Image 1 (cartoon, rainbow, N blue to C red):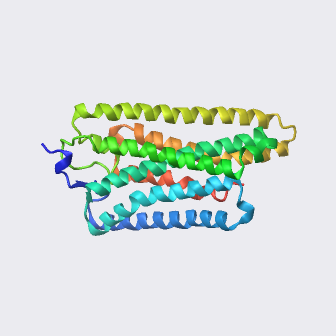
Image 2 (image 1 turned 60 degrees about the horizontal axis):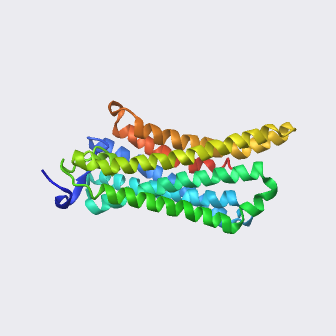
Image 3 (image 1 turned 135 degrees about the vertical axis):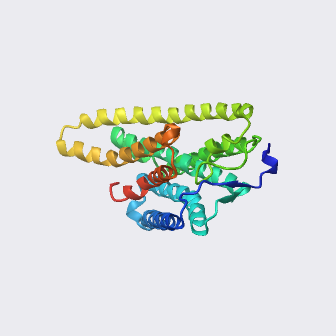
Length: 288
């Protein structure tokens, strides 16, 4: 029996068993990284340099691109290193940092998507008050609140997870560090705190989801009251990209957490991690 004080490193799950497949995965991950860097870099540069894009929607888009870039850079570089050098080790400290950063950036994305939903609600349902409710100071405060909430959320999860005694070795069944895999190494009686924290997390996520649903119900009601077809189409076009991106983010996250154990595989987990980061890049051309 071992505990967390004696563990100096974890063993990550290898993406492939043969050298050829390892190099293939390295090339795939390299392509994903370059696409994420290019896509999000273009978004950040365009919003930062284009004065006509200094609007609340594009300000939140810039923050979302930063969160998206951070989330993919948290897991992919280590997976590339392991595939290239045929290793699976990750230090205890690096694993804790990976867990913290991944939850932080994914949490920031979800909170920012909720804030962007409020932006669409105000722009369509209360257009005359848009400048007042979403001024530069209000947008900065909402973005800061999203980042700060994600930071506290991630800090609580990470601190609680790595304070648990680990009694079942150090091999993780995933190609990156994540809380469910670490909990499998923990003593069963020590997981009650994490279960309670997960319950609080579910309540928080569900609360944001209720706000999103309520906002879009009001948005669709307002759009349907627009007399002209052109006006309805224009209003819908400002919401559908955000709604599609939100649906993709939530569906992949839900499937990743709730999928049966028999369906779990490194290739499927890799595909799901790619889908987490794909919406921000693909949204650039569709957000008006």
